[in-house]
Length: 191
Length: 178
Image (cartoon, rainbow over all chains, first blue to last red; front, top):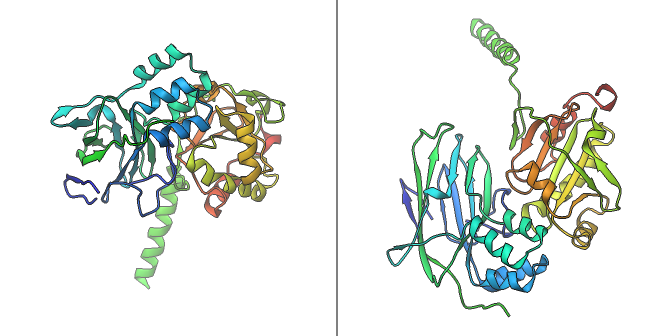
């Protein structure tokens, strides 16, 4: 398994069930690389194209949408605020990289443009939206959040540095979680 | 004896202070919010009957957004069924809103998990978008005047005593509203 260092001192997350933007706490053993300490739990779970296509196909997504989904790298993330203060999920503060090059996420604007091109039905768009990780959330004490981050291009492995401001006014200490060599499985092309 | 008296006095002062500040004990994951007016909610249920939130003013309403693909929603739903049974005719109106799924998907899921529940169908997900929950599942508690007073973060074990006690204590039943 890949790993995982974090600051200040973390040890090595989720998703019994994929893809929910809010959640119960997750039971151990976590189904992917994780970092956990007294403040936070963060789990990342790479998904194969086959897993993602099957999930959305079962929700009635058309073939053209499944092709677009299969071309991307989906990683399901679960985060839980275990502290007694507000922790800010702001994916703009995250760094994704591969081979010393920064990676860009495929964001809402990207997907909205693709869905417009193929006239994806509104219900499918709503479902896809709810399965993405929110870009910003003031996580309250005890609050979990989950969802997918999506990368484009031919990425095989990548690193993730996730930074979180704390406190209602964002003036608390900054938390950081690092994941190295996260897999981006490609071996299951959509049939 | 002197120490016991001091302890009793301290305890009384704490209780009085809590009462004076309106301190409220909420179950885990339930958050008081600002009492903003609830957005419109007009949908048909799984049987095709129309529902309008405005028409139910006078009740506390438990508005719950969910989808069958969402794992925490699946985990939570049986507890909601037991919560409804436990609350009986408490006056709390339970409103389940399925987000962007088909009747077949919902019927299949609820038929197994909670066959007595009859959700509203937000077929295209647009009502859910207006409510802007923090994720799925999401639960709002709307007071008899139509204002959102509480939100639950993520899935909750609604049939546990602390949640049932909280829900029973929400306030006036339907007859005292409007």
